[in-house]
Amino acid sequence: MNEHYINIIMEEQDLADQLKPQLTPSTKVIDIPLQVFLTEHNLLNDLFSFDGGIVKEQVYFVTGSSGAGKTTLFTQLQCELKSMKSAQYQRESSAGKVRSRNQNMDFHANAHLDDERSIPTLVSFLELTKENKTEFIIVDSLQTAASDIPGGKLEREVEAVRMLLKWAKETGGTVFVIGMVTKEEDFAGSQEAMQLVDAHLHLTFDKKANERYLEFQQKNRDGEVYKRLYYSFREDRKGVQFWSPSEWMVHKRGYTLADMIQSAMQGYIDAWRNHDNYEDFKAEMTISQNKLVKEGFDSQVEYQCGLLMICQSSMETHFGM
Image (cartoon, rainbow, N blue to C red):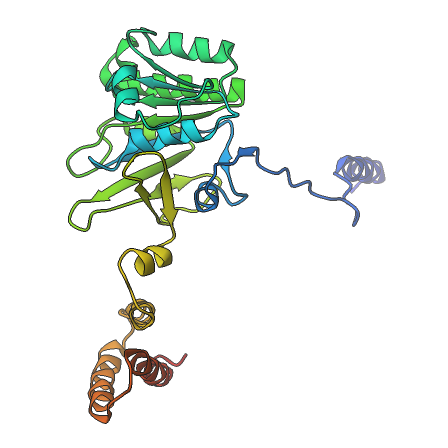
């Protein structure tokens, strides 16, 4: 190759090296903490984000089964956060009915309730709350609030979510938007609208067990998904209490220590169901369990601890753990 061209190539390589980012051992990646606000409930704060707290500038999509208490829960949240300006835009019911059903709650000056009669459209509601420097809003529901927006049903819902996202970014506030569900508890609306939001919180009411719990499903940008948290309302509707699964099992279902050991052990065993030696393991455990019963034990705790030792030994044999 001609020496002239070699020199040109070398000069270009030197220039490229100079333009590369110069990283040194002292270069630090700055970890910017999330901007959050805290509720009165530590368990709820931990559920919403890894940093602990409800994240600002986000839109939380909320769904739930009938009787889960979606409106009641977020109305309670409004009443508890006295130092924060909040507004609920009620399009499924009316502001008067919400206030009447929750008359024992403390509706302080910063907790606003609005409906279609006081504010006709979602656009007007967002403009007003922006002017008032409202810090978090509740829209119930997406489908009815979006009905005033031009276009088809699904197009309206998508546009409404985009408006809520824009409001959150421009104000630094937080949005909770409630969506109606089908009998199967699936969101009865646009999946595109669901994909646009930052997180999806689902509330469940198990009528048979008379239990309520909530968890983030599908997505939660800044926290865990499918982490369950139980909750119960006071009979006078003056408050809500949250419980971890373990707390609920012990204090509400009355589980004993033996019950908890058995539950934990069964969950661990279930994790090996697809192992090739699982059936052999089960057969050996049945024989050992019957033998333990014949030998007798002083308490259920002693029995479960003995079974735990047998289970550990059998797992080492069959699963190589």
